[in-house]
Image (cartoon, helix red, strand yellow):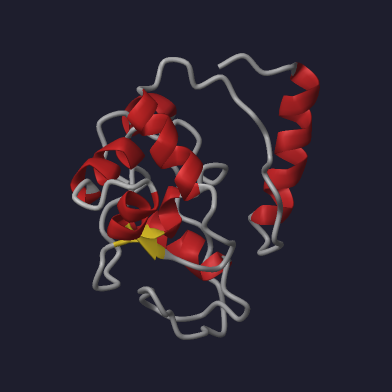
Length: 152
């Protein structure tokens, strides 16, 4: 993925407020040329999910015109190279359970809570209840350790 240094600096400046609970836009275009067409379509569709909301794997598949592809959507999200920017943490199972996430379910819960107006709930599903205090973020695995993690 070729990115200009200036863009990286801007991206870092936007990620900092995001992790304090501020809604931040990520309209960036990245070179995703190594991805399959299906993966790119999944990631583009996932970027349509509004901040603070969730959608199901089935919703992503249906939105793409492939309603039977929910499992394949999960597999494509597991290969998402840009979590947060391509917000795969906002995709949950059809019954509102978390599903998977390459950063682990603890991180997925944290990100979903972070995007809520009053984050404090101990568990987050499709319609999370507002929590009162936000715990510290979990430690992220190194990039090479995250490669073999759970699917998004």
